[in-house]
Image 1 (cartoon, rainbow, N blue to C red):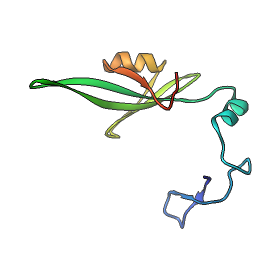
Image 2: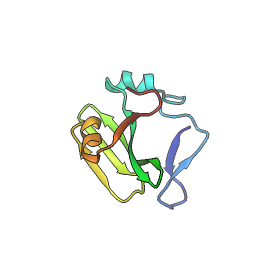
Image 3: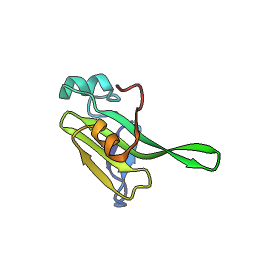
Length: 103
């Protein structure tokens, strides 16, 4: 689905049924062909001990690109820029979980 121009001046992109810039939905294969890489999405998960249980919690979401990785705190409070997804996980003391089959 194409996210077109701003909708009615509200500052948010309108979601429409119009085709995207390629005349159809853009796929991961299209991104690889256009840019030479595919962005990879990940989550950073920490485990917290509570009483008799260990509770996993997503602390950040991120995107990995050839030049590094960017994370957004799960609560939206902050963003971070890292050399890699692995370095972000290390700094957070978290497990790195690749999303949507990314590796």
